[in-house]
Length: 75
Image (cartoon, rainbow, N blue to C red):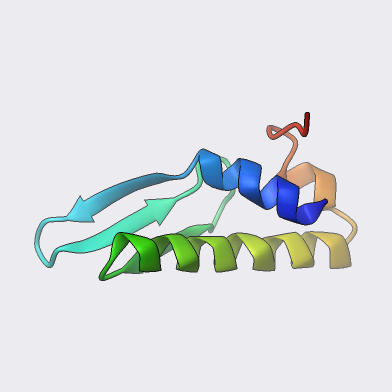
């Protein structure tokens, strides 16, 4: 189920290219601290997924799994 929440959150991710160095920046609005930077878009997406998955694990460990993802609803 957590993978489903991560997938839903990643659908909301926003990316931009940092023109100074050509790297990609990504973040998931509403999930504080879930952001990534990489030299390729695919790498940025992988890093963002990894960050979101760590947030998932921490939320479960601390019993707050639903609070981080309250804006994302599984169908």
